[in-house]
Length: 173
View 1 (cartoon, one colour):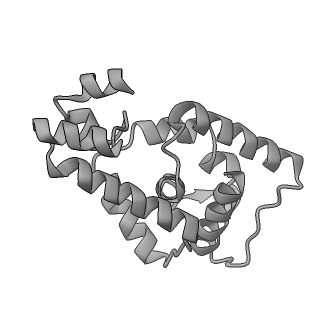
View 2 (cartoon, rainbow, N blue to C red; view 1 turned 180 degrees about the horizontal axis):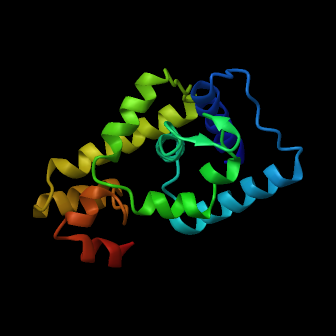
């Protein structure tokens, strides 16, 4: 997971700062400490729901805060702890409703492209398929049976959260 965070941070920072060869040095003790601390905070808050898309959205959201700001390091220069830190996590929790729109604009503006691994694509495809199957008969008795037969219950999935059979399913699993 730390490698994913590092990779996404490097890509976004590289495009943001104009230094596309930027590399986050984890040999530096302070950088390593910040990365481990941030990873630990993420695991406590979002265990099980962290994937490349989440990390990209989180990191882009943080960089957006410094887009038009001249820091003491210079324009478009930031410290790692400003992006991957406790205060950044607090900002993320209090993000406005339109955050995704502005994240997408930022990604387009800075031409940010993250290569998704084949394993991530397969997991994403599986999540999509399960989600689609859960929605087929949502809030119907036959949907409950369908989900139980295919073992589709996931406590934090959108469909299961709003399903009227969630209590029965969660007790059965």
